[in-house]
Amino acid sequence: MTSIILNRGVGLALFGAAAMACAGQPATTTPAPIPSAEVAASLERSIAKAQADSARYAYTEADIRFMSGMISHHAQAIAMARLAPTNGARPTVVTLAGRVINAQQDEIALMQNWLRERRQPVPEPNPAGTKMVMNGVEHDMLMPGMLTPEQMRQLTAARGPEFDQLFLKFMIQHHNGATAMVKELFDTYGAGQDQLVFKFAADVNIDQTTEIARMEKLLFSIILERHSK
Image (cartoon, rainbow, N blue to C red; front, side, top):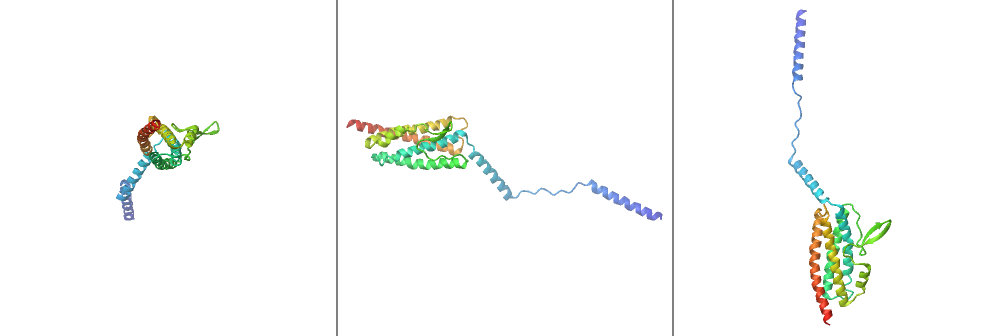
């Protein structure tokens, strides 16, 4: 009987020691998986895309106003230029008008797409100005340099050398307005940081400043020619 009790006690003691040993050991954990090269590359691509999107969408209200307003500004320049072939303009003026049409049609599409991608209202190309609502009434607001309705009527009615002179005079005015819009954009704190807006505005400034110089020279020669007759 005593032997049975002793054996039972030894068994219990051994079981207790084993249990304590197990309790003292740290729990086995599954090691964290090491990212594969493919996963790491995917993560890098996601970060790069997020950074690109952040840079792409860093725009301001001033950028939106500039792009929206320049659409109607360009639309009027195109309307002016389309008069050249039908109003008896000289070949040099017709060529100049053709360049205006080709360049500014593409730029209108670019500006509309920029606004659309940012879920902003996309105005239609309106030669009369940008639609604005004041006191519940919609008005056409002229951007800097745009022709008034009276000036547009004068240009439409002109023919031959008179058209050439008026066209150049008014297009110089129009281009000066565009460069003024660019200056206002870049003078506005935080504006013009969007990559596309910056490049487009800088290109407008360079291209139209160059065209102003070309048109001033041509206008001067036409004035001399008309006065010499």
